[in-house]
Image (cartoon, rainbow, N blue to C red):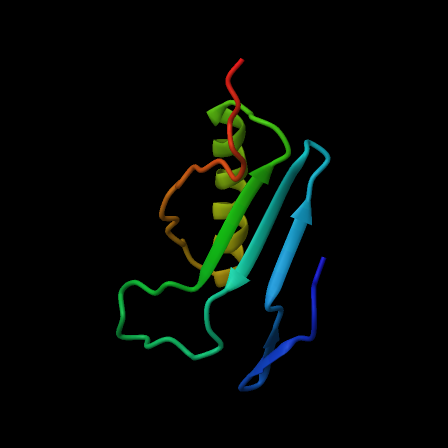
Length: 98
């Protein structure tokens, strides 16, 4: 899904936020950090922030398979290998003890 209008940067257009909702109850949200062109002299550049969220607790292997797929897709989009930083795992609700 694409939310909002496309952002123009030079002669190219890109989506500000892209979101994938998978059949295995995973949602992957991808946000571009900036529309500014990055310096080609820089070895590393931070380009996107990705959020991989499941609707219920899942084993780490499920997260790793989604991260691997994201790595491959972003590498194909950029035409070269990308690096992923993370994961940072968090819980967005309070846990209750029984």
